[in-house]
Length: 79
Image (cartoon, rainbow, N blue to C red; front, side):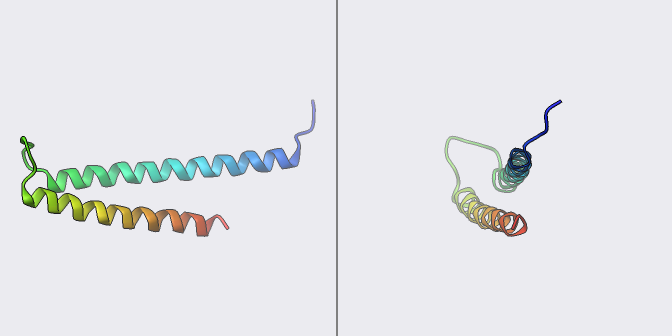
């Protein structure tokens, strides 16, 4: 049985941690997207109402703010 290169093991652990963080971010993005849709969309028609446009725009902005915050927080914790 061969010994595992410590640097390779460390890189693998780092890779797994990064992938777990990406998966967590994607899960949050999916949840926020569902929330915006449920909050803003009434009965889909041929075009969006002004309320739906404004709501989706505001929700998307909050979504981006939250995403940036989450990514920054994860980055800070991994240091």
